[in-house]
Image 1 (cartoon, rainbow, N blue to C red):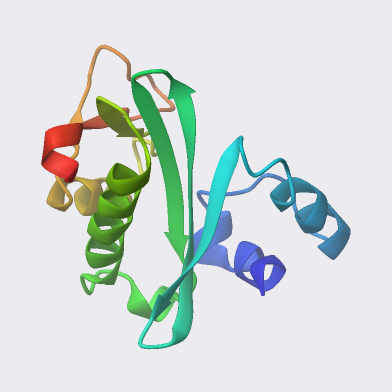
Image 2: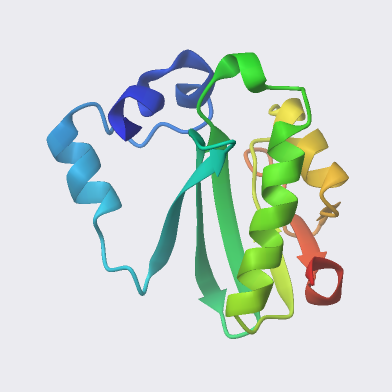
Amino acid sequence: MLLDWLQRPHVKQWWDNGDDTLAKVAAHYSMDPDETRRFIVLADGAAVGYFQYSRLDPAQVGTDQFLADAGTLSQGLGTRCLKDFVALIARNEAFETISVDPHPENRRAIRCYEKSGFRHDPVRSDANTYFMVREREEAA
């Protein structure tokens, strides 16, 4: 399933780690669970996306995610899932901030993050990264 999702054009455009075989996906996504926490997100019992988070430093958690079906984009599903995911992280981890780092041209993702409470951090952004952060108290 994850291999199929990673090959979809709307995913591959922004999330391409070269995982184009089942062996590569298995190797990449089977890493130590203490490093990165990985989730298949369900909505109404159906798998709708992949979400992950990891500790970046003692005060910060980073997250990445995508929805599997292009037909569900721009309908609020990503925002709902992300808000719930951030709340899950807040219940399980101690942190001050949570961050995401979409490509600056990925306007759909940036809008989803904004609607989920993330704010642009221009100091940590560059030509390839639109760094965004959300405070813990906003996540609970």
